[in-house]
Length: 477
Image (cartoon, rainbow, N blue to C red; front, side, top):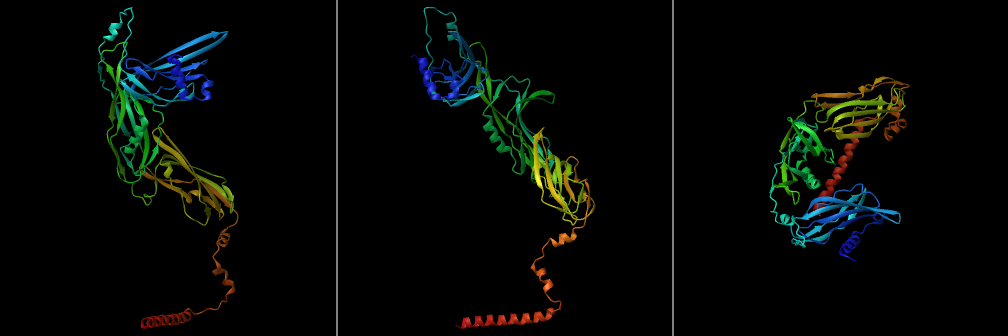
């Protein structure tokens, strides 16, 4: 058994691929346990009797640098039966001699995920080239080639934290966006680095404690073409949220840094050898402060919601009978802190009974703002016949920061109530207790309150005398 077969079999044993993996005839093979620094190490994907339609990225390995991919395919006919295989090979080059740990990794091949067990490999000194009797005229040229010299390319890019407003009212929303901008004229080769961990730390720094957060939850970072002062940029949104201040303290966003991989280019590029060198650069945003304004004077300014809202309402029946129940829906929709919307104000009255509503809430975070609706479904019963405007009973006051004034959402539904008055039913339905139940059994003779009070005073004096006597007797003993 030659060395290639030994490596392949030992690797497949370590991988422990599932039976499903074998049935689809897909294999993943790691390179040798030891190789020279002037040689390439590889990871190979092979698909048997099936086309290699797609595959995910090969892993990043500390101590190794990716050096392009190659592919191969073969088709065989044996006894009229065709068999085929297709392979994709990822090449790696070591950055230094020593031990390198290839971690466990997952890779998706033809829409199926495979788990691959890593291993430790050793990078040795450069291997001596074998010289044959035939002298390759190009061999000396490549061996005598001087080490590559790399130069740093200035990046035409920046990190910025922006807000849609610089000053807002208490309770008004402010949309905050952290994005990385790359100019169309940029010539530096860059890519994001460990973005998930970096974003987690950045959010901890910029999230204000005195605000309610509605996070836009950016899962995929895609470039969007925009113009800034006439210059074309690609914007990569990293984090976006709308904050609603809970007090008058200014919202302060500190400067934060984002680390990217930036490649240095070789001074004299050639077809062979490394043409770029991996490096890192951190981009920093500028700090930002947003001022919070107090709401104008109003009796309800400490309780009203802030935003731009409209009313949508409905009722099950506009012609009803006293004692007959009806359903009424009061839905508030618009731009603002939907989660914090208060229920409408309904004062207790003798004409209608309204019960605690059921609430349905929908929130949408898109187009750089938070919108949505909150619906209050009431169950009501009329007590008195007549024509009524529900707006006289149900209303909702809010402050509109765009118009900079207070406004009221008021019902516009009119209802007709027929039938008999339920006043007496309402009184009888409220049990006043056993005291009133005994009234009809008591006589109507008036008793003087003063005479009763005289007896009470005498009894109290008698009890007081007994207590004083007891205390004196205690101390004598």
